[in-house]
Image (cartoon, rainbow, N blue to C red; front, side, top):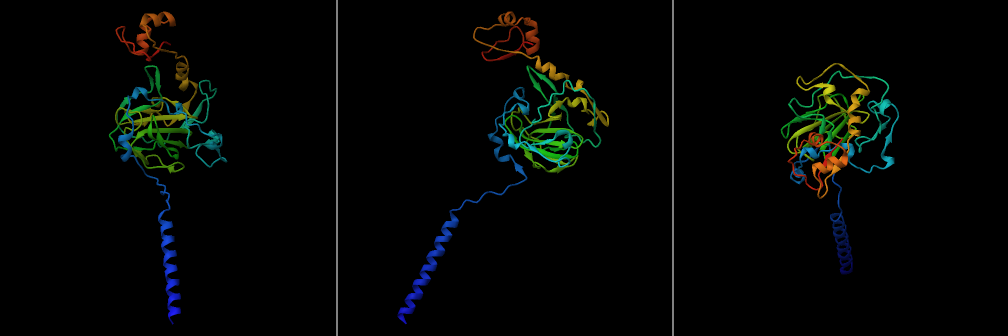
Length: 305
């Protein structure tokens, strides 16, 4: 009898030991956090560097080092305007590498159903900022204001960029792509179908931004179009129901290609730079919004063409 009880006690002890060991092993496992479609940037807001808007760059100037096999090519009809673009890619802003300044034809783009992203005033327009180029239009917002999608389409990119903070790019069925930048929160994810007027995110000041605003772009085949050519920012509607897009919409690219920049070195003066570049002092001042009394700091870039 005693022998039987001893055996039972040993078996029970062994089972308890095994159970404790298994539980200890489970407790050491690291479980992956589940993915979420809602990106809340509140906790990282204070970690984002705020800079002057004059340093804002175009999204496609950032080097994402995208591997060639991430350039996804799908069968026709699987994504909006696929027959036009051929490529669907969720990392790079402009993977298309298309030059439109000499496009021979006129393309008719349906603008029906347009929804303004936010009804507020323009704070910065499309065009040159000193020697840089601003490829969109800025609209005043308060942090937390709702930002809406302009046309029906599909989200191609929704993530963080060092210059544009949290941003969304939507490709639309009419062939345009729209960009919404400096958001404080995203409510959409890549490959999500969205309707005109649908909430994309909340306004904010993430990335390179001196204060809350929405940077808004309209692009065709990756090349920015002046939003004023499409939208009346006083009435929040399109100028017409159809945009007849042609090479003249991209004349600004030729002006950008003419830009030459002088980097100020020790001992440089406006007179000296004028002699070396063959550009008058008055022109240098006009191009760079400076006066003859402006102190030239070493490393400053001055546009001379």
